[in-house]
Amino acid sequence: MDLSHPITMIMAALGLAVVALLLFDRLAPMTSGRLGLALEQRMSGLRLRHGSAEGLAMPYLEGGSGAPLVLIHGFAGDKDNFARVARFLTPHYRVIIPDLPGFGDAARDPSAPHTVEDQARRLAALLDQVAPGPVHLGGNSMGGFIAAQFAAMYPERVASLWLLDAAGTEAAHSSDILRHYEATGDMPLLVQKEQDFNTLIAACTVKEPLLPHGVRVLLGRRGAADFALHTALMKQLSEAPLLRPQPAYGAIPTLIVWGEQDRILHPDGAASFAALFPRSRTIMMRGVGHLPMLEKPRRAARDYLAFRRNTNTV
Image (cartoon, rainbow, N blue to C red; front, side, top):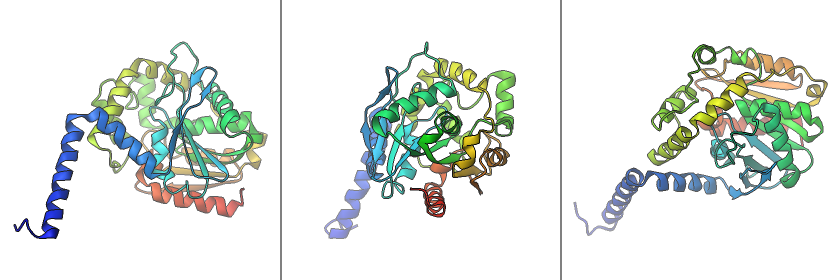
């Protein structure tokens, strides 16, 4: 190899840089993980902001301009679950992605209730500060349950809904994984030790999204630290009253998205949500599991943009 040739020198330098990054990822995974998440946020045009509700810290990501689009993560998730898909949304909307109390970088208070209604109320309090008035609301899994509950509690504040593999109906909860949880208390969303995060990702996706080693370590350690709290919160969530038909639901344009290979929440849940929301459109995503916005972010965003155009929502 002629190292004096400019192209060869550049390739050699790039190779050394990649090796250095891989070593850093392995030797300092927590720092690497935090930097990796921050880089993805920046690439999506998002900035970290600080908010609170009921005395509980609720940091959130914000980027873009225009009509507010608020996105709510699922159980064991956080605001970064939507950072990848936000890359295709911030050119069109003002995207707001909070951490719910008990998750991500939000406050932990084991003595506080964390029911679906409690989280919807806290979300409303946060939005009073950062996005008063109607918003377009989306949510995945537990976040979809909270979004639908929010729409029942505050229908005047919801311009449209985007429900991605949402919890909250009997059909959605009929999966083998949730039945196993009801019988044993064991499920992949409860991370007991750092390595269990890999089990969580495998259970939630068909083709695992690219997640560097440092990010997996960071999220695995955080999940293990939250194991006792999340075990209690999962019990509260499993005992939550299911969604019921609401007069307000009939007026809300709703996009229902479901991964056909979702193992956490049964794909039959899509039809049950379509029955709840008469002005809805349903998209079943082939080869996708529980996290469409992570597994197929470009397609998920494209479908959402088309939905917004076709429903003429402001």
